Length: 182
Image 1 (tube, one colour):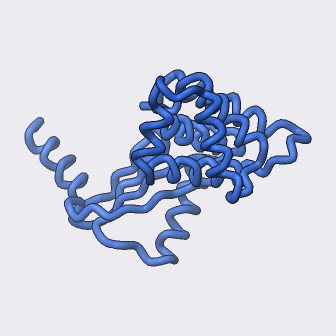
Image 2 (cartoon, helix red, strand yellow; image 1 turned 180 degrees about the vertical axis):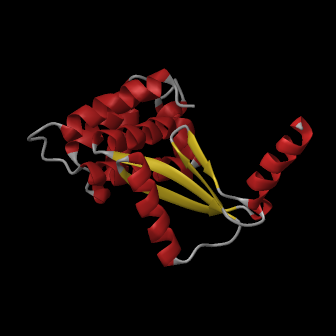
């Protein structure tokens, strides 16, 4: 579950990048945030320095500015990262990026879906599931596929708080409940 703080920071950035005339491509902003998140995760020394109260915010900003300069990060994302540093929210940066992606998807009319299947799905099967989930939700589905051998066969799709269980395991469980309840 995302924290209130992560959602608040993410909403502020979503408002900036989706504002008319912002000049920022929202998908580019997300990619830049993900790159910065990976940069922070890749170096324990960097992460420790950014989390340390002994290092001044201005020094932290200078280090981050040098590291992200070759990446060509837009000024809105750069300034946002500086605000996160100044407000000592670096520990929540990953959650902020996750909340940003979720809120951005909502703002742009996408719905996220997680689909688990017993075996890897073919491209036509994936496309068909994406189309069906988009139709059911009334929004364009961004689907993340994974495999779960415990399902035995079939698929389980989660769209928001709704679960569509077409797995053999789910069918067996529903049958068990019916038999037990009489």
